[in-house]
Length: 92
Image (cartoon, rainbow, N blue to C red; front, side, top):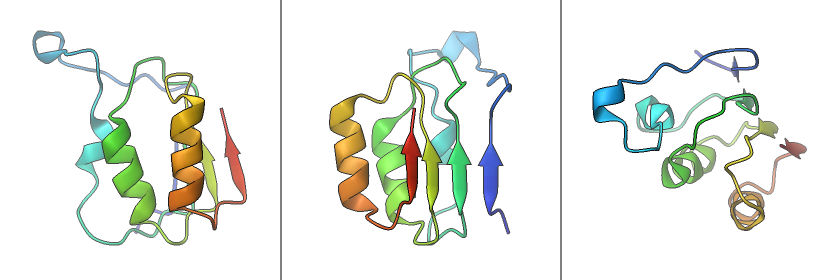
């Protein structure tokens, strides 16, 4: 089971023909509760699906560390803190 996903210094490849500006790799997580404890994608340059991120965080009761990229605005950080008050490390 996946507990830590750290995409620092990683390149998220996309299919340019399907590119809508949003990279939706977060929606690829299986439905249901996850065992994620740490998710870091602060070095990923492309926008992400914020709705999918919120759903993933809500399904991850063990998530303590979340590092997001510059496309996640302060309003979304607030929403993430509300969804997951158990976070101990939230940053950009």
